[in-house]
Length: 294
Image (cartoon, rainbow, N blue to C red; front, side, top):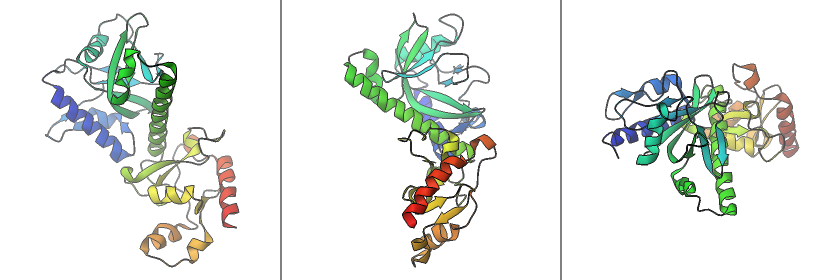
């Protein structure tokens, strides 16, 4: 370990705390100026390149992976993320990422979900350097660092791959949805990211339940639970409906202000048209609500 490692841990904690407050994502502005609990701030992303190698650190601090980028990063194979070398020699920026492998220090993986918006994963570990394939293997969780050793049998590897892929996709879906809704509940407009979820309109177990923003809603935890239980419905024209039984019930202020007063309100939707809730999916889901409450 290097003398900079306590600083590395502070930076990682600060980035993940920032993501939690945002609702699962960070912006380029967040990463350009991360405040540390000990005072001061640090840059956590390179201005133009995908690998950030601070001068005062012996090893890479963060790497960016973009689905639309020039590199063939592969999400998960055998429970590990394949990250391509930076173009050029096997050294250059790659040398410090290789050093992270040699030292066993954690890095941050920043998955780009839209321009200037990233879902961070940390601590992430470089567990192998495949020079012949010009790529590194990254473990997205400390619990799967041992996967780089190749000691797993086929069923164990398939299980690890499924678990890691699920974690990756769930985090990215949440980050994309909460970012699209500008860290705000679509029903009550609560702006505390820690209290927001990305709810599926059509469940992901359904064929139509794709992990697309248009199949998602940013909801606070009470409205997410009510939506999942069909106590709260959303019509295809974005109007919030509450189960009539709940409207007639007498209880405390949470029921009155949190649910009853939302009846008939209009959903707050993303600015970008392509991110807005898909009306066909809402129609399908609203039919379930109507059937339950009728």
